[in-house]
Figure 1: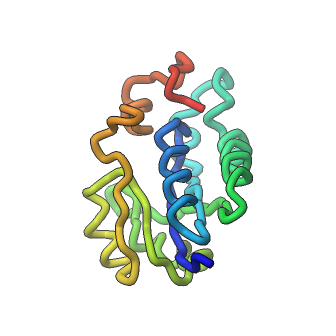
Figure 2: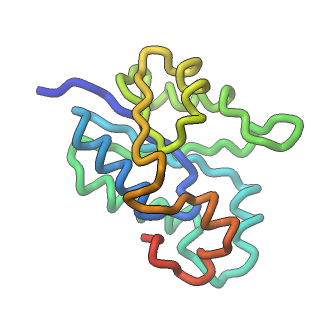
Length: 162
């Protein structure tokens, strides 16, 4: 039996096919995968200016991720509130998030992302884990949540969204 543990986390704001691809990759490579969705009330309010697009709400993203993770019996899903974990400049304090992640994933063999730039943080926060970069060049699904938010694609229900 495969005893390896993988971790994949993010805001999933909005959730898109690249996220699904990363979850699928982790679930196929590991015996157990923990998926964490980080929420922050400030981000929610900034992006959800109207009631027009409920797919970005915490509730909607939670339901989407629960459905996806239920497809893989070796995958579990949790929501982690990081509302008060900001640096003085307003950016996210990933180091402060690390103990919250460790509550759900005390030991991991692999940490998954599509961002090579996360490697330095991951090696500091999860030194036992190998960083697995999934489709960094975005060839399988050429999109990211940051790109979607910047282009306001989420308002148009673009094909990349789940």
